[in-house]
Length: 205
Picture 1 (cartoon, helix red, strand yellow):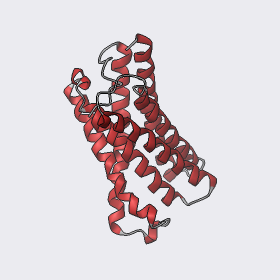
Picture 2 (spheres, one colour):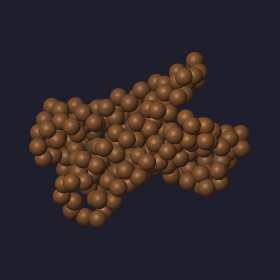
Picture 3 (spheres, helix red, strand yellow):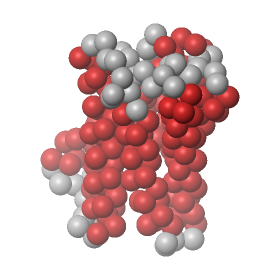
């Protein structure tokens, strides 16, 4: 992997971290102040999805050792599409924020699957153990978003009528808005500093 490629990966990882934490801040501001922070959060969610796909896809043109490794990258790309779709749904007014949030949750769950894989890869062994643990924990937490799939099928779009089990899926946002951004900032810093450079774009299982 070239130095320019490593720097690109690092910058994308840092950008994902910044945008993720920014989305959390805008969500907090929404509850305190109101609009336009809801829209800002929606835009941030979609942007985080795109950045995640870019970070995962940096390895698409490089050697893949197995179908499973390629599948984890594809999972992140598909997840990004779901995340963007969720943002588009609510910004356009096609659905309410609740159903759109379910769609985005599933998207970030798929990104979480890639995140677990990349932190369990052989290349990630060059990273600090704490960083790898953080990445796996973030990804596993994001996977809670898969609980939202039945809610999407049922077209649930109101908090008041949502079944209790559906709320379990919202645990995934802790990974998306907190753990994943911290991981991104940490990995990005390592890549830009020249450490862990060969591992950042190896989403291996």
